[in-house]
Amino acid sequence: MRIALGQMQSGSDVDANLVALARFVEKSALLGAHVIVLPEYATYLKKFVDETFPEVAEPLDGPVCTELSRLAAHHGVAVVAGVLEVSDDPYRPYNTMVAYGPDGRRLASYRKIHLFDAQGHAESDFITGAIEPQPVFFDLDGLRFGFLTCYDLRFPELARALAVDGAHVLLSCAAWVPGEHKLRQWQTLSAARAIENGLYMVGSCQAEPLSVGHSLVIDPMGTAIAELGVEPALAVVDIDRRVVAETRRRFPMLTQRRLPGTK
Image 1 (cartoon, helix red, strand yellow):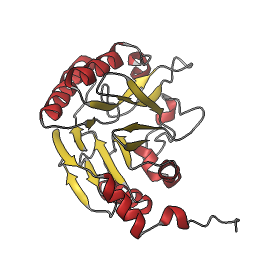
Image 2 (cartoon, helix red, strand yellow; image 1 turned 180 degrees about the horizontal axis):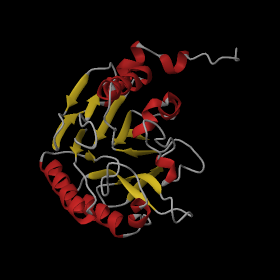
Image 3 (cartoon, helix red, strand yellow; image 1 turned 30 degrees about the vertical axis):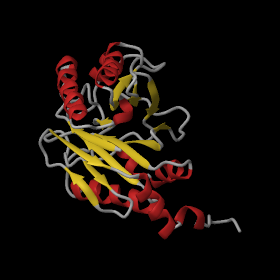
């Protein structure tokens, strides 16, 4: 399967972001991609999450997601992106990943579990975390894709739960905040999640200056088979379910787990 990474430089103009997003989807389809993964907050982003984020949030059948569905169907490619979804709290929407299939049908949606309350940021002041945290995935063309959003990458339990549920690929939509050691942590944590679960890690990150860029694809052995720089860009890479199967045969960690307190 061919996966595309769309590294955006989103801002606070929703319409402009959708135009840029549409160009990424069109180009990925022309390059033969089956899935394109776009970043967290793909349709609205500022340096800090603030009171304007709830103002642009929509239901998943609103204009933004309707456009994502249309683009997926028009170009015949699955589209995964981070959006703002309204919640029961009008002042704190969900930070949501959505996936639309090549027929435009919504395949899955995932509300971010771990909110970024760190490094001087307080995402939870303006965003609602998933009410009932649980792994979310979708199946497409014989592959199972699991969802992570940005800060979730630091919590290996979610990635492991997705692997146990049969995920071959983890998709991470991110707006990884810059700072000391942050790029290395993005790269290292992405590789760790791939290695410890024997699967592909696909991370689509926002470009500089609001994020670190370096969207990447890590194979099940921990090798970066694609990595972008810091500017908006597109990368396309082929992944193979047989590589996952062979890696898990060589390193059967999922079947060898011994949980503390169990026999």
